[in-house]
Length: 231
Image (cartoon, rainbow, N blue to C red; front, side):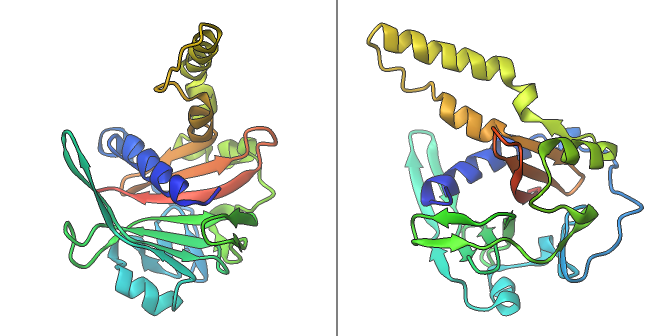
């Protein structure tokens, strides 16, 4: 699940939603949220008390030590021009992954997003498991939460369940796939499995960042949380 393919998927998800932060974010910063110094403050976007927006690749390695694995920064050539994907640091034992900006765009490589793994999951690229994150999380979020509890607990921040929001679009793609297969056609742009993976999530938009709670589509248990910082 946590492969380089998912690395690019998470980047796609980040780009597809982050463009609307500035327009859609409201003054949702929780006034009752307790500061977390040993863990991740989801509302204030802090880890161990430090603002995520201030972290660079160098600062993250100073804080957390040598990562278990690293994905190099890459550039992609498209017909419309270049796209950039920064480095990713994998901390399998800590249940964390960190994505950074490409050094050609940001010499200090500031943090772009962080993934908090709530369940033990296999990383096929590096043949090891991500262990569940053991630190504290805002509002006591944990791996035993289902999507319904996220919606209820974060209701003051106007969460959106993309499974419900995009149901019609997802079903349309699946229908197109089935029709194309029946006609012996290869409809490459329609990928219902990809849509399902993206849509099995709850998004909370805040002023400086957004939260993506990814859950297992059948059981609805939350599997990971991504904090994506606004550009």
